[in-house]
Image (tube, rainbow, N blue to C red; front, top):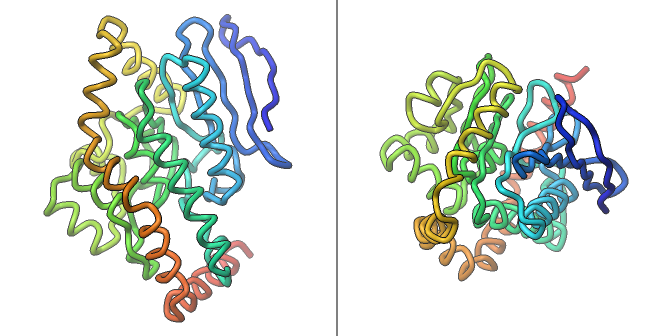
Length: 280
């Protein structure tokens, strides 16, 4: 469900849309001067990717596409977290149907983001492990706010396996050998290291700076013919897109079977209990 309102920010008129089911999970603000949409995940406390948030994210991306957005900036409304990644509660003690529904929501949100024709940028304003990292590296360009946070695919640290479509994105950015080592160890990279290895493209002093640099990237295509840019982007991503479409059901089946293994469930239980104790 989307709600609409108009706001004034910095002397500019912006159109703000909110996508949510029961609560506000995603905020979308369009800059009337540039036509750029800023999509902010807003599921406190850590933007863990549950089914509702993923569906809201997909809806906001499709709305941007259908309303002729000039570009999309994906960020977070939370001060120190971009996204903590997959919501472990969606996987713990869940039956096959729930697991399949959840994984398909992640698949659909990812494919919608990855195949966006307009320029896409992640303004990463905080920690971005696992699924949060996946969202960031699915955009064209990444601006990382300086700080003590980190980014990376850390699935192995939870006893999980990063699927092929996670791994291929990593390989495309880091190169095969660096990606292999990072995936095996579940490495998390601090800001400067993430820039050094090519996981992010640029650093920013704060979120506002990250948004401005993200806008600069999108506006750098103003004089590039849209057709040529779009077709080049999709051609560069074609192999993974086509593989994914052909293997989507098989990918879901692999995920469901893996997550239901006793050792995986026991690992999830231990980690969830650890998080609960940490919050006390």
